Length: 210
Image (cartoon, rainbow, N blue to C red):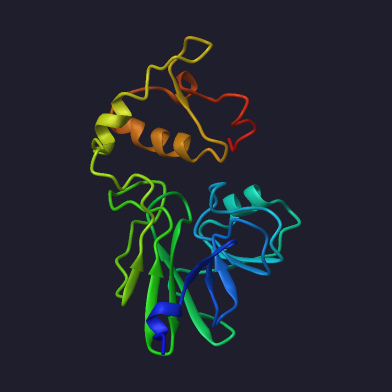
């Protein structure tokens, strides 16, 4: 007989699925119930009947999914039951509102990381280690060829930039999260006035949050 640990979460053609709770985590296609780790477009996709996300990330999630999306948000660590499966969201430290999803059923606990980072970030709640039996880790940049420089060094390279205006600039993503992170750490690197620094993006990223 297949063990519970082998079936608590599985990959389907719509994404990571929990049979016992009948919900998906960051589904690739529309589903009835989506648990969303964060608001980036490769994790939060349009079309699902209902969504569960973190209270901290509610604004950016609604910006991504639109005013008509049915979204329920919860505080960090607040337990929710879906069809007898206990779910809670815990900080992932990636962007504002980014969450790890803790899934508990029948004495088995799995944690799905979503995108995460362990380096402190002034724009979001820091990563929180969560005890579990199985940790499902996002690994977009998991190969050993990737080595990340400290945030302060990266921030020093952010400006001055090659904006079309020729003024100091930092490129932003569609939700404004990269711009938020860079601008938050700039005061520790330079004495720029806010008026002297301008976010800019390509046609693929506009419009974004201010």
